[in-house]
Image (cartoon, rainbow, N blue to C red; front, side, top):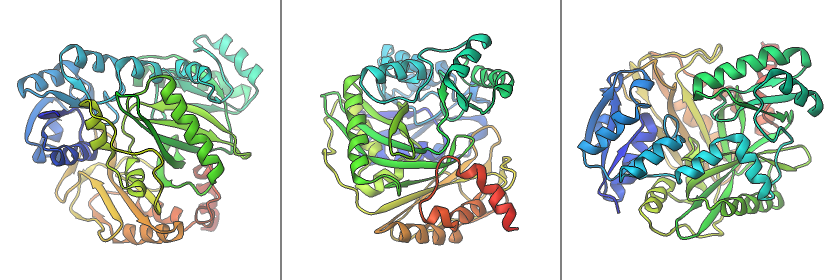
Length: 450
């Protein structure tokens, strides 16, 4: 087992890794930018190292600075969390060549699954159904138009090297194509230094369902049950739940088995998530794979009573899986992402938290790095906290989440708490009648109510 882990991240995921490491008896090192000097992960880690100014490219994305911090603190492993360098194959390669264990999959797997076009081809070979689309990246506008016309509108443009909703545009008519193609390319280039795009058929009424994969270096692979992630805005998830109100037992067995077999076929190791779209006929299609811990992992931990981060660390240290195949879900779990943003305009709302109260009680979990008096920087993601609940039934889980959000008080900045409460009281959400278009129509519906 490792003696010291450097956490190449910030915020709540850095704290999550610190907690898991401490339970395993491992010391931790926090790296931080100048604007994060007083952040909670720097206070609670055993050691801390400043790696640069606020701008992420000069700190949390600066590989030489992070490796220097690992060297001077004699860290023997690096946990990348999610975002930043978590899915950067070059970072994983440099860690490996420097004799530092990268807590995640091998660089070759990150590179393969990180390129969405290559991942589609690989999943086809693994006999996983994929969304109809281009088999290779499309770089020229005339060729892209030709592919889109042949495929039929609506289509969706996606960054080949992307994730997190960056470089994605839905094109509903041929007249929109040229402008949106340029926008998607520019956003992909800015976010990933790679403007390559690929094209998929847009499934308008689909559900976004993902399967948690965990695999060790001894050939053991376990696929846990689904997470429902269809409540999202601009491809950014807002509320997640498990089990999905849409997935029945027959579909669950099929999609879990397919994800597990696909992971085996590519020799997957560590944590990962296989993401699917499920249409109105309950046919599922592979969309992408994320080679890291997911933001929404707490709801899987709650219904299965497992610690995914501790398992991820053990796997990186060469240990066998302690999670058994065939685990059953117990209860229903919801997670709400609380962001520092205006609930109407969705514009960021950085600033100082003047007063803060989080909920507590049985079946309530809060993952957060926020505290009273903390100044939320404008340089990073607006996530303040993840509030998750566990109850015996979905109806009870919704009521418990409503209660938890009503007990949450954050003064000094705007948050999306009101938006969450409105969604949770929506009759379609309560009935489980929603898909990835829910947030597109929802503001109009809300406006009509007013």
